[in-house]
Amino acid sequence: MTGSDGPHREPGSDVRAAGSASERAREEEERAVEQALALVGGSDRSSRSDRSGGSGEPPSRGRDTRGHRGPRDEDLNAGRSSNTHADRSRDPQAHRSSDPRAHRNSDSAPYDGRDNDPRDGRAAPAPAPAPASTPAPGSEQPPLPDRTLPGDPAKASPPPPSWDRARAVAARAGRGGPPATIRLPLDRAPGHVLAEALGALTDLPSFDTSAMDGWAVAGPGPWAFEAGAGLLAGRGPAAALPDGTAVRIATGARVPPETTAVIRSEHAHVDEARGLLHARRSVVTGQDIRPRGQECRSGEQLVPAGTVVTPAVLGLAAAAGYDALPVVPRPRVDILVLGDELLNAGLPHDGLIRDALGPMLGPWLRALGAEVSGARRLGDDAGALRDALTSSDADLIVTTGGTAAGPVDHVHPVLEALGAELLVDGVAVRPGHPMLLARLSPDGPYLVGLPGNPLAAVSGLLTLAEPLLAGIAGRPAQDPYRALVHAEVHGHPHDTRLVPVVHRPGRAGGRDHVAPLRYNGPAMLRGIAAADGLAVVPPGGVRSGTEVEILDLPWAPATPWTEGCFT
Image (cartoon, rainbow, N blue to C red; front, top):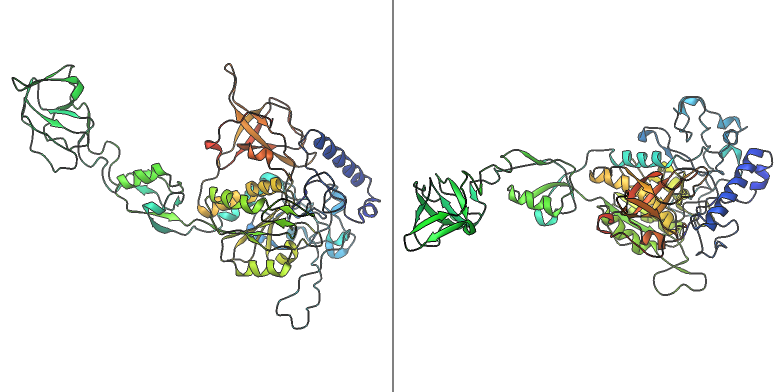
């Protein structure tokens, strides 16, 4: 199931817009910008007719035929249940209803999509609940609610939250409770996050050791020595070394008491005939000896809580005496792929297209630190979706497609039937604006609803799933950073754009920079496949030489700079 990210006119929109010149002007402006972006390969292409698009791209689902509500306010616990919506409007007057039921006290009004306090008197009216349909005879499950009628002014809702606000809501949701702690043996700990700070259980090193193969000497030279293997690593303590004597010693072996220094084999001259050792260089007291506690003392903190257990952290823990580590369990994620038009194998045919998200999401979510079950393909079946949501024991459920208001877009009505709390319902970002974040119950799983278009789904992953999973797993948030962009990047008039980019080194002393990649339409993956990051482009776009925020992809450090036909 795929989703479009361009503006979409639902049936009856001309009638609704007839009384609003500002709304008509806004729609014309967005259409002109989207068409211009399509010409330069950077637009969010959309169809205004049917699910098949008409732009030469695969059939598209999840088209935004209604507006999106923002989060209720800063308190996640004050979220609201799922509801259906009318068209989004940028005109503030479009959010005011003549229906007296829609006018609520501002103290209880939902967040209006602006960055001001929601209680400043400008909050949009809360949408009225949708009427429920009549249960079927003999039905054991509650029916799905009826969808909102297009153009119903009583259902008008505020614009969606900004991109950075939506990410903040997702991150805050993930940190909503104290993380659980489990202890895992060292071989199972990599990739998890430390639940507690790691303190040394012993001094490192725990005794004086030789840093080199050579000779342990005591006092001034030359030194008398006896033939033999000498001191080897892993042996018990040796007797004290008398002044004027030397003994062969291996790297890592315990240094005898009273040792002055270790002389490397290549810096020593052995007079076998006289049984004397001479130094070829001056000897400094303590040279090439690793003293006890040089790296750390027992009880000293080695790494803080929240650190990802890398191979290096694992080695340090083992050296410090650990057999198991206290870690946060990996978040468990279920993937539900929706859409009757998707193929699991073979070439597209007869209106059917290949499922790109099922194979992509599992590895991507694992790279974000999650434990992922195999993707389940449910088709366009509301009952199957409801059963899958209610039977899941995951921490997060990720769905693909079905987040808009088409005839087979079931995510919103199923969430409403289950009494889910919508934390984010639409985001002012392109591609991917129909994405959503919900909590199925106070102690139940979260759900991230991704649009069906592949790049739009990637946008949803990085906007909502990545910060949510980081919070659940106790991972530190990615530090934002900015980079120069070496090209003009067109923007959406109102929304943030996420554009695939590749890092490139500066030439002749110039600064490193990022280059935007082509093939960045919402249904395309060719650009993101060559990318190592996404540029966060503010509304209106940026000129060449402007610094923009960069979101690294999970595998970015291992990705070489890409050259070729994508820029």
